[in-house]
Length: 338
Image (tube, rainbow, N blue to C red; front, side, top):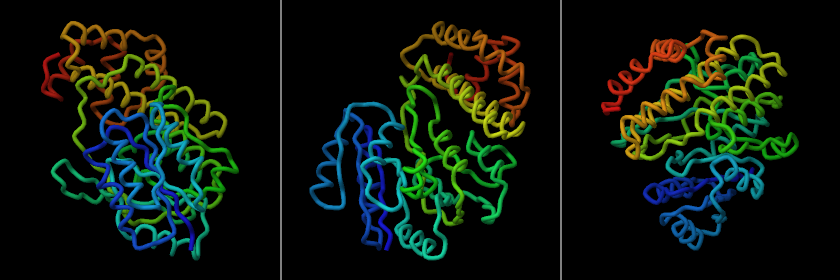
């Protein structure tokens, strides 16, 4: 019986933490550990972690200063003692038959990584299965690595980027020294982690069972905007382009990372539009500063790919400095005055 290590990064999730941990403890499987890594929570999350650990010896708790999701996952990964490891975000949860099914797969398919399906849980608790069509174990590896480099495109039949969407062979990760970068350096550190995994893995398995429940929880964007977000998005783009060149991934991968950059810029605009600490003039100025970034302009001028009409429109507005249209788009989309 294989041992599973479940790494749960924790930061200010007192409302959802017990639901997450109870979903793991309800597994009909004995050989596992839960590693809770409290990333300097300022609410009662750290206290809840300690209480849960006192109630069950399978739970280990580490408290640390706030460093962000990527480095927090690394702490749990380094301390894990299981044969296989996976990550569960502390506001999500898993199905109660996950360990048994994965262990059954391992009886016939020893893998470096196993990608599985997910469900989406709406704010009102409705569970919506996400329809995905996984490939057989014979697939185009170059395309798979490319798919790790951003949000799914319209024609993608499945998603592979998020770190919580797979189970990993711990010895494989250690042998290839695969770890997460700091999210304070780049956005979406999941994508680079997953790309490294799929680049190095020789045994990749797909399981079309939705083990993971991704929850669309209420999170406040009121004061979430960080001025360095667009710069981290551009830094991520360049790191992905370096990988594309090294691995000779081709134009499809370039299109994907360009599209992902546009998504990150759109999210930055969304955060600005919802920021209660900024007045209308400050919001407009911040959007203008992003649009005037020469590095961003050069990237968008060099590649015209955008996967949706909204992103095509956004690219046009940035290149042609149509700030009033961006302001209008934010107002229409999010119903806030900018």
